[in-house]
Every structure is written in structure tokens, then in C-alpha cells.
Image 1 (cartoon, rainbow, N blue to C red):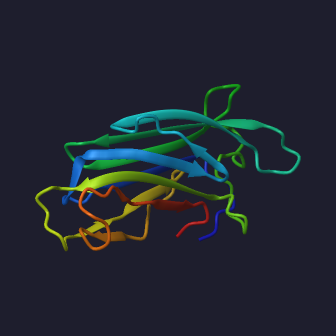
Image 2: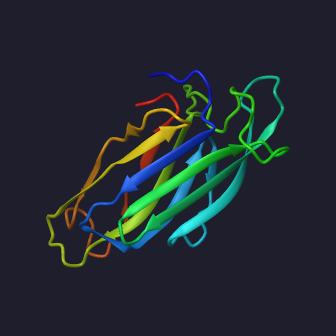
Image 3: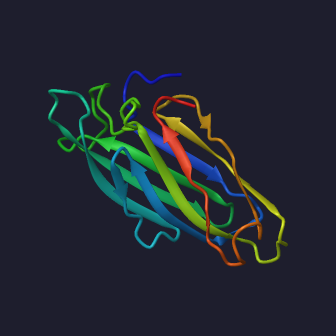
Length: 174
């Protein structure tokens, strides 16, 4: 599937593996195009507003991009939301061809990612396989599953290593 218009809203949802210690979760990074946004202390939630120039030649508008992240440490559900806003109205752009994440190209301008760190549960033995995947919804389209990422406790890193599980979002689909 190839996108023909930019994404105005992107929602990433991740249900964390039960072998992970959800209380050690930290938001580490969010990025889209050539922008990387801070996540503050990154513990249970964050909010940041970035700007994104319109990708179309001859259109000189700059959009706000509100980015939020939150985790429920009781359920292990994590959600990131990216939302394009018109600075003049504070609402989604009325222009269907406006958005923070344009269709992808060879330069990767339609790509983004979220990164977090988390530790395995202390009672999990070396050799336990940890698997992570998420879903991404572009605007109101059907959710797309990310490719799973797997790590094995004790396979490479010493105990206490902070586990990074990146999720890649691409505006052109899976």
C-alpha cells in the first residue's frame, strides 16, 4: 500500500510482553522526518509540540505537531499519538493534503520512529525470549502491525542492560 497523502494523525499502540518489568519503562525518543523530539523524563507520560513545514513545493505553511506518550504500568499498554494541528485554528488541518508525515520517498522523509527502554522482570532467567510488536494507525485507516522485535535475556548484554525496542512507522504502509 502506498500513501497518496500525508498522515495528519498517527497512533502507535504497544502491548508490552509480560516478561518485562513495566515499572522500568522509559520513553527514550520520538522522531519523524528529520526531527527528533524530547520526551522529558520519559517515565509514565510526556507531551511535546514540534513544528513541521509543509512538504509541498510552493506551500509555505508550518504546522504544529503535538506528540504524546503514555503507559499504563498496570496493563503494559503504551500509546504514542502524533497529531498535526493548524496553528491558526488549533484543529486538524482542513486541507486533506496537509500533514506532518508526508508520503515516503528515497530520502526517508515519510518515516518516523519511537524508542523506549525497559528491563526484563528480575525473576526471568537468562535465555527467556522477549518479543515486542505494535500497531500503527495512520489517520482513520486500518491498523498495521509492525514487524516483531525479539531479544533474549542474557544473550548479548549483561544483567541490568536497558533494552531498546524501536518501532518504525512509514507513511507508505507495511
